[in-house]
Length: 491
Image 1 (cartoon, rainbow, N blue to C red):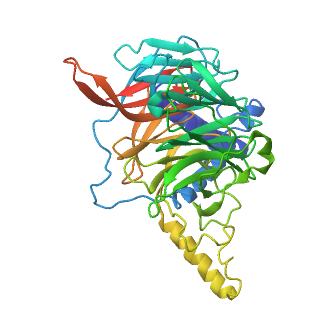
Image 2: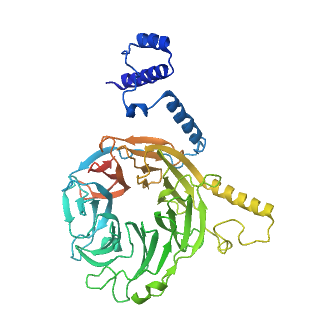
């Protein structure tokens, strides 16, 4: 049935149901005859139909939508910066995976899949609910290179290659953190009591900082160090994850973690968002002396430097949670945030308000905590000033129209040129938003099955060998979903 006919039939049924429910019998007969509808149009046959849409329900949805639109924020300036660049990935290529299972993560990474000391190559990586990890070639055909079947005892939720791909960190559903070199696991930790949903790493000189987030409401911080005589990635060197150097205990489960550099002091900071909180929390990352295994009870807590509210003027207990944070590829102080708002995901482009040295001793749970001698009016003014500053840091707040539920996993990734972001959805569609305006400018279909959940997305440049042997750079978007499809979107 054409879309126009379906829409007309739905509208007619709604009107007929309204007239029938309110006993407008004569008007109902005239309407059915003029609209050409059957005599039983608008009748409620079972409980499901009784709970279905009505004209009153449609009007309530429209009022709620109009109210939410008032809180959206777009940029209508004439500045040509950050305009959605063309061409953009839009052509889907479905990759044939060796097993049929829901995909949990996917990306293109430098990866050394064997134990020989060779330069790691870029591969298309995907993990599934069947506990397997697959590597595919990035060249035409995307043939399977390697499948790791015994690496993890539980499905792999997140991974982070380090040392140019010679070492890989993995986290899984059993709460483990694994360190893989080549085809073998060289070390593993089991500090989380539940799902270890995310691992991020930051490399500086001879040190690798690692942070893991788990659904036991904890974040652990690790520090890998290389000796002066060998590198972490040397095949013959002994490398281990070691005890966590610090931890963060949260009231609720963490949603997203991200290493960033302070724009003024250049010190390393860990950004954290958690469930049932509209704040972004700034934690200090500081070198710690190695902790013996027998002193785990004395593990220190990371210092909370400050926090930033993404709903500063909201009077609700909680409006949303920052479910995913992604750092801009060109601006170290700008992030994109995918929120847990229902029934549609919203995206925010936010300027980070790094805590200054003057405010680090403040009570981060309230304004004015450092100066109790202030009058009540002065404290209220200070709180309002902070709210206005946090509100001004929100550059874009836009509805993506990507449907999601309380069980969804919102994801946002930047285009490599910084002109836009991609978001996933539970309807089998990937949407692209322009950073300048915050508006949805492209909708990618025909890759995933309609109505399926897209679990993971990744975007970036991929170096490919050209026909004459030269290297060609292409922009890719990779997505994996619960339709068991791995899709590469190309220009």
